[in-house]
Image (cartoon, rainbow, N blue to C red; front, side, top):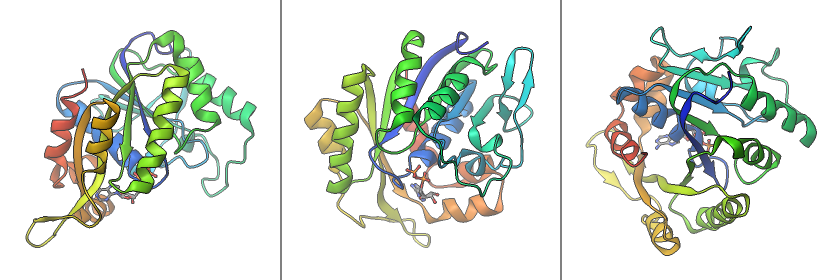
Length: 255
Ligand code: ADP
């Protein structure tokens, strides 16, 4: 029960919203599964849970068993299980307006009461910034000794300032930084597949070098990703997208 059978716990963080943190979480999860691992994904973005939609399993529900809550598996292999508040809301259009203590008790349940079983990796998708959810998860994870955090950023300066804050937060609560992914780094032309820099590039790598953290790599904007995801099963669309090989490289950095 709970997290005892999990080998590696990795948080995915970003300084602000919309930089592709949840996208990176889903792609990392699938890349890990494709390289032979059993993976769980825990969505603790309580006010904006987007992972059920991203995985294309938004109509599923979490069930209770004597061992705890059973994650929603993306397919019958049960190699990829997902837990999100999104599965527990009766009306998905209602906003989640919770104060800190209620969020804290939800996260405590997520840490203690999920029947993950044996997992190679648990990826934890967090809200942007540093909020109640981060403070709660950092506290409850202490005894489970998480490997650390992967930080997602875009290449622009303004996003990088937020990353510095995120890194300082991790230092304060004792979560090691594993590495940094620069998402939306250039644009892959759908016609000629050439990658063009829309904004500046290289900011993430520079920051990683400055701060002495590992740079995991750049992920370009792939317009085909969203259109494929609207039409196909999540896993199929991901495997067909131009980003597939990028994430195969990025997961090699995880131990
Ligand atoms: P966050 O979790 O940081 O708020 P999301 O993962 O929800 O960000 O991404 C925001 C939007 O950008 C989503 O519609 C997602 O599909 C899209 N997106 C993110 N990264 C990429 C990428 N590399 N290529 C194409 N679309 C992307």
